[in-house]
Length: 88
Image (cartoon, rainbow, N blue to C red; front, side, top):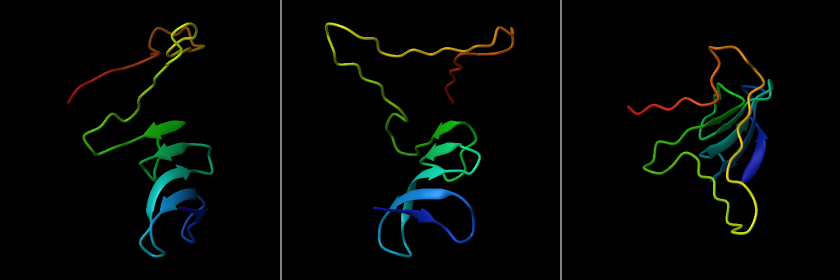
């Protein structure tokens, strides 16, 4: 694993592999966007996978206390969404 900047842009990368043939895994853009599985994130956190697995998985294993997932939006506009789901 290595971390660094490519000479051609201003993104910070976490990558693996041999020099010259690295695979980028996590990308941090100068505007604060983070990409996992993409070198061009289009959202604050952009997770992309082309394999036959979940792009994200959240597990809460504390059986006596705790929550699984909390999503909050501060907007009250009727056209804003907390979540959007679609299947191809």
